Length: 194
Image (cartoon, rainbow, N blue to C red; front, side):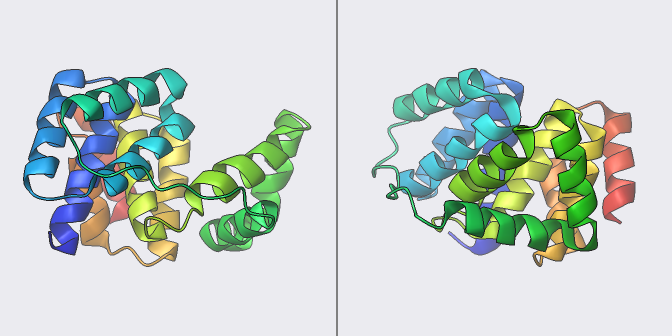
């Protein structure tokens, strides 16, 4: 499967899973399996769903993936010793000059929240080596668009650009939320992307 088709498939799956659109998710998973997207890649994409939509949506998506008969096991990784360091590196890459401000805000919200975001969300999930960071950011854009969460969506649109996604790739990720997100929410997101 070529890179563009792969990205579009993963973003559509992520958006449907995050929104709890199981019929759409089933269609997208069957199409991805038929197109030859590996079970490992699909499981890795669904693993990311819990960061944006919670464990219940991720569990449902994993169950739907089993029904789609995807071949291949999920990618496993020993708990890396450098998880906090690699999380901080990715966080800094994505937020750039805004890193310190965003981290300070997360710490103000709850004393442990900053550490959880950097170590767990970025270090243990988003910095995993099994999918390129650009694909992970595009999936984040699709999920946040589907969930209609404008501030984090804007941050991840900018983050996707920072890690190398083109405007066309970001717009395609937003297209993954068509029929899920309100049209006006998608239009605002497209303006941020453009």
